Image 1 (cartoon, rainbow, N blue to C red):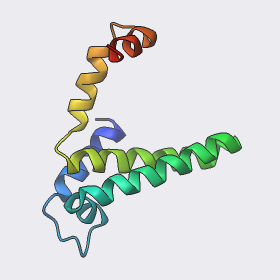
Image 2 (cartoon, rainbow, N blue to C red):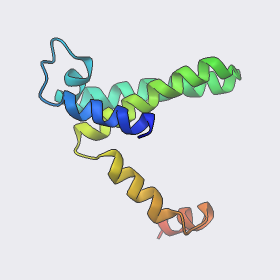
Image 3 (tube, rainbow, N blue to C red):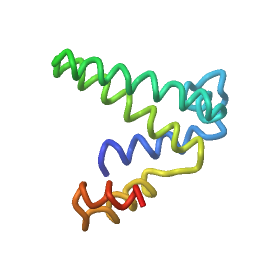
Length: 103
């Protein structure tokens, strides 16, 4: 089991937990807040990418992945759903995928 699988399982286990004692449960209970936090973390990752600091980028990327998975879970989208979509896209080039979205 990968670290992302373990993280997704932990997030799923927090559903229904007390939001007063779990940050994850608090975000799962408020999908809009989960989305806001993901946006903040994504921007912080971009900033560190531009600054070219690999250690800080690694930390911010981990934060962004966590918040992405929480945001998705808050709306009923699982890591397995995301992996299935990525698998579906494997047979196409990135340019083909983008062109298909514009239609």
